[in-house]
Image (cartoon, rainbow, N blue to C red; front, side, top):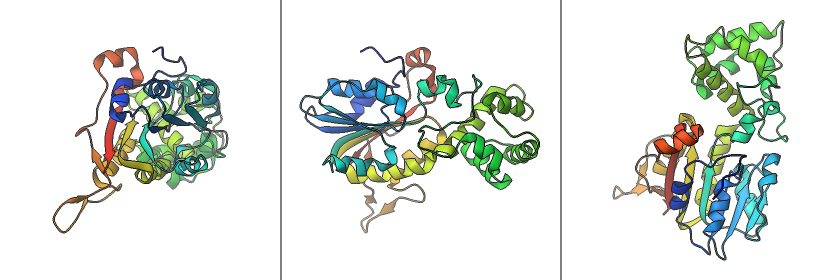
Amino acid sequence: MTASPYHIPVMLAPCIEGLAIDPNGTYVDLTFGGGGHSKEILRHLDKGHLYGFDQDADAEANVPEDDRFTFVAANFRDFKKYLRLYGVTKVDGILADLGISSHQIDEPTRGFSTRFDGNLDMRMSSDIELTAQQVLNTYEEAQLHKIFGIYGEIKNAKTLAQAVVAERASRPFGTTGEFKSFLKGYAPRGKDFKYYAQVFQALRIEVNDEMKALEDMLLQTVEVLKPGGRLVIMSYHSLEDRLVKNFINKGKFQGEVEKDFFGNLLRPLEPITRKAVIASKEEIELNNRARSAKLRIAKKL
């Protein structure tokens, strides 16, 4: 299969294998993007149907002409509600490739990348009102400290938050280039590019409410999956992976796993893979984005 230039699908074969596709089943791709994973799922379907979700309007250009496919322009945090509009209450498998697409990164006007100069936007959908520029120019120091520390895992988060507040008083932040130049003074020596990426990640997560959206989505997967149905989730940073791992292993995001009177684990999902699946060296050489991907697969009990 020829991958779309919009976005090269990561760990395509393990994702398809993890779904254990029934040719006549109903499936959901919660992160349609360039359509790479969806088009491969369609190759394995006969009379089955696939629903593809994406909140980014640009993704609609990649929708395949196939009667077995339905595109839903919506955030995956609401997927249960939208499936019901199509009369679907239970499905055989759900796939989500989290994070940001290559297309979004490579489009300077979106403001996601440290490689280009563009507006400090970072919205995954034009329906979102908050922008990265607003976060930097209006959030209180304590809020910025929390965002940089938790979402970016930045060691000097407090210092950076103080500096942002002081800088914007005389010169509000407008573009990614301006902000990146400002960050140079606070990045560890020799690790500046990693530092920029961490700060940009923190802003992107805040703008798009990514962690809460992920929690909302995961909770709905248990309600929508049929018994034996598969959940295939690919994440790209530790915050996402920790949420996914805890939910699969414990049925919740924090705390210890619950047990019944006989000591049996009480959880709605069973891990198919004991550890996260990672990309091969060969794939990483072809697609650098795969280097940080972690794939987790589970089935509904």
